[in-house]
Image (spheres, protein in one colour):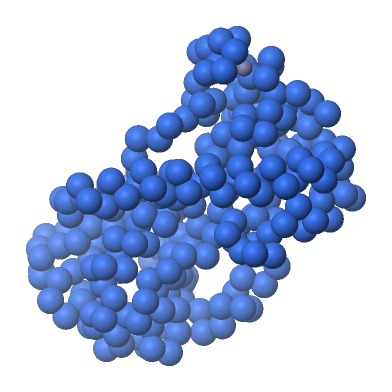
Length: 268
Ligand SMILES: [Zn+2]
């Protein structure tokens, strides 16, 4: 599943490719991918004003509405020459003025939806962006104070901070030296300050390494935004901790696979 840094990479590539281009029409080969087809058709002939991101949503700002894309598990974009044959996993083809853009999705979980009112669409669903200046230690402490959920679950809650997924939640817990099982109401204020810094640092590092993907990107590979990450814990169960060499443990928190160092990461 693409996480915020991968989505950000896709957004930057798409912004270069489709901004100021006119969407002529779209062909849909798997109906469920498009939530509201009529509203998408109504945007035919409009120019893309900007491509941006909110949480893990990709936003194409059109002239009268916004197209929102959630890649979910496997969604990715391919740029095609005009009328180039589509792949069997291309469920939607966006026809632009002088090229086509395919939305490929082997698992068919990706969703594309048109919204006239983003405020309403995101209402209460998404919390602060990681770089929002309102994201402070006090904000996190207030959100955590009355809740007894595990830290890992709290970090994955999109209504607190938007965009953190499984990989980065594990990495953030590692850098905080806190067990993913720590109950958030026990975490002191100074640790929340660290949490703000570490979250930004981990995501920024991933976005920066995605920059190399942008440079080496070729259309034939598709835009997945995936790249080699410097990972400390995620996917490294039974391997030695980078800091203390203790073997990392795999466990499950809130039904999500979780890896942590039993030595470095304390449970408060
Ligand atoms: Zn360790």
